Image (cartoon, rainbow, N blue to C red; front, side, top):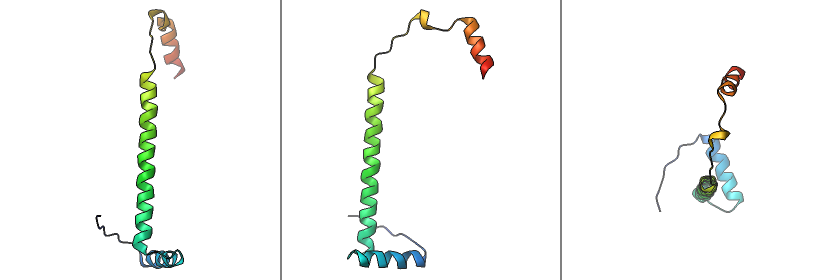
Length: 81
């Protein structure tokens, strides 16, 4: 386990000590639980995005020359910007 040092304003530290005492925990335990939950959330969000990316990339793509815009349509779209 790694140790970290965090600086917080005195009023925040006092309120954190009160919250920790109410939950029968230490301030370190509260911070550890918060960071663990944050890390798990970020990891699952990353995994969700990776899964969605894999789904999009797995879709077959078909391009046909007939699907392309005609020259007049292309210029018409540019005029709408």
